[in-house]
Image 1 (cartoon, helix red, strand yellow):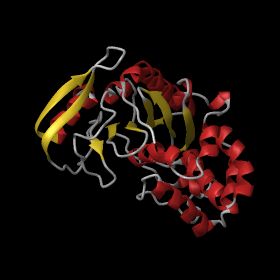
Image 2: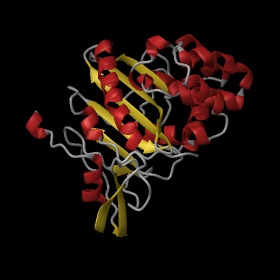
Image 3: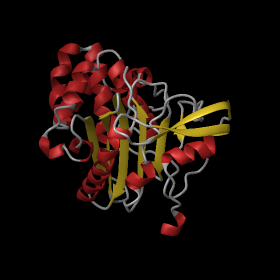
Image 4: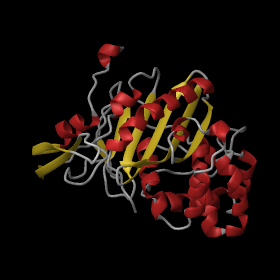
Length: 305
């Protein structure tokens, strides 16, 4: 399996795939570490193809193409290195807060069921439409309370009305691709929790979450997640995040998170997911990713709204 995992840093892959007639030069942040930026006069557009085992770490835009290399990126992140020791399907996507920058990704897990991570745009939709119902968001976000999340869903009208409200929030956050179901697809689980949410689109949404209307209270709650759920990104000081997890229809667990973490001069949006044999295995894997990311953050450029 290791022979199939050709290891590259995110920065080197961006240089290889994005730029025609380009140069890569190093910038030195205040802490003295090195980052790669991209200077180009001619840029080609690349449509992503099949994903190899081990990932590629190249940038995507909302249209699924490579954006101009002169735009800022979170290219200082060694994404392949963050997930290289995890067995089983895993994926990560990273971009600067504020939008307008590349989404870098790595890994062979590109999408999956949103589970409780979808409670974030759900709570924002309620904050917009029926603020009086937002009290349920406290436990829905901080403790991942499913009953409270169902009350949020119902307050939007249920079915197509609720799905439309969440969809509008996702679109404001730069994700016009993800579609929230309107009917229950697994009898024992919520309608909204079964949303298929690609990591790239989730990271893009996270990057604009602080910039869209009615998100302030929800972001505050994402910084108050209960200690028993503060694994993964929750191990990074100053992180605002939400996790989601649940069993697959054919066994195993999908465990995922997305959130916003501090970086140089701003913040990064991060989405990570792993398919594992058990929930505990998934928690350990995502905590390992977060622990590997933490020492890189002082040398990765962040962004702001």
